[in-house]
Length: 318
Image (cartoon, rainbow, N blue to C red; front, side, top):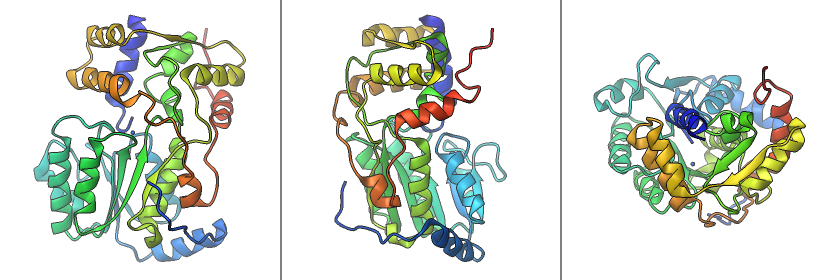
């Protein structure tokens, strides 16, 4: 267990993004017409800054904008100019000439101090002439609403995209090593979650960044079914053709193992928060917000699992 937790903690540390209805329904148009329209608009558009552009949703947002011909600026430490949430003095260079920002904080959980950082960033973005913000927020997290309030009160155009557990947590994130080991051992009990696909999140974010009809919308994204972690293990088992078990373990034991693995304090804090507060059944209901935003249903976990199963991701090399 300890070695799997250590690998998981390392994956969480590297990941840059881990997590209400309104009456307005967007007019739907054929996808081909929409893409052509947005491509024409993009040729004159100022750049969009994509923060966390190497993470699960950020890199998908960046690649989709590029495919539309939309000019982008990558917001990562390795970019030029570099973006670092801990170095405010470098933000101006990243925001210069930017029209819109995909705001993706390094953790999708409300780590203490994050609201102050985001507030400072939003103030600087406004002074630099940014006009639109699309915030990836945490679904069902009361603390995350502080982030949302900062964006909503900014005076800029905004869209809030709320999400919780991703399908990709099991293929790109913290739990892929557990899948390889054949056992998903987590303190999740039989709690149900509406796991959502990162591709759906990215599609909604790109729509919000490129289409003014999404201004002022709060999209609370879910998948098509409520699943327990045992259900997830069963879906993956069917896709890969071998048994993946789920074992529920005590939270205190899990957190102690994460800490003993040498994970940094912020990772330990995140894991404790994630399973102690965010995974308590508060999100055990579905919405139609993917369909409302995109005019299509969300991707099912079973479809995601089949897609991953034909790649090398879950393949065990002897």
